[in-house]
Image (cartoon, rainbow, N blue to C red):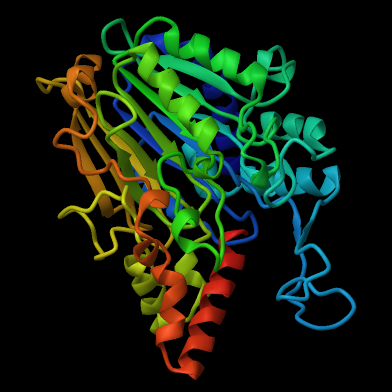
Length: 437
């Protein structure tokens, strides 16, 4: 108990000190993660602590605050299937949300991290208050306060006075600064089928000022949902996942803002989907835009099935078309996705010439499962002289694929024996339900 109290006090003091000293140390190790069920075991903190990050970034679903109702195919309230008439998720009370945050905040491994690293973060749907929710959620103001309390946000912080939890941080001395921009993809988001706004007018205005402001060597944009990948473009009509790709006009605006700002060293980090992958888009700006997805710390798509059947998830991940996924020798599996618990790790070698970035998704033991080594010179605005599509592989959006390629996952069951087809369809639908958790 004494050690626990000491760790809590040390963490609180450290967060206060670091909050006022962002510019005073060179940032070279960053960890990030998402999707941590407070009721589940969280052994992955051991690997994160061993990596010894200076900063840890929460990318949402930091708790699971809503209530997941049982699968009911039949009966008065059907929560799944073609006759669904009741929601699968419902909001919980603010007191229950607070209780879940307290449980998450006192996980021993996380306490050790808080005692030595600066912790920052944003939210996604389940800590926002409801699965897939957007601006319509009535409890968002209260839940914003709960999240900021969880993150030890100072009481006089502008985040406590604005609508939404978006913010930015700058670390390091001039010439070696790292800017971390955290977006809020919930508070102002229009309905999923609307192709409306993700960020809302006030957040767009703020983001424009951030990206057009003083330069930094590296700019990391944290989004709770994927920016580059649009797997819903190929998994539909079987199931759909949230991403910026479901708001194509809004995503185009984001890419245009980065391009017009002529800002160097920009890349994305994201969560939400319960697997890890790295994607890139070569035709949004004059240099490749990477998106490193780490999800989740406890929630993972392969956990849907017993170990002997997890090859099904890996096969489907490989079979589903993805024009943006980075596939190289650093991938553990052929699909270059990883469906077990994971976290993201960023290492910056400031002594290299040019500066080098090693960005990885790591497993529960801290071993890499996919990764990229990027020279900072590759992420420079002067590369905008390169014509779009020239010597660039990742330029075809998923929705532009020939239909027989784009929808081959949906076509797959039709080519199987009927019994096997029913099993595969069930596995995919069940996986989708877990992905939404």
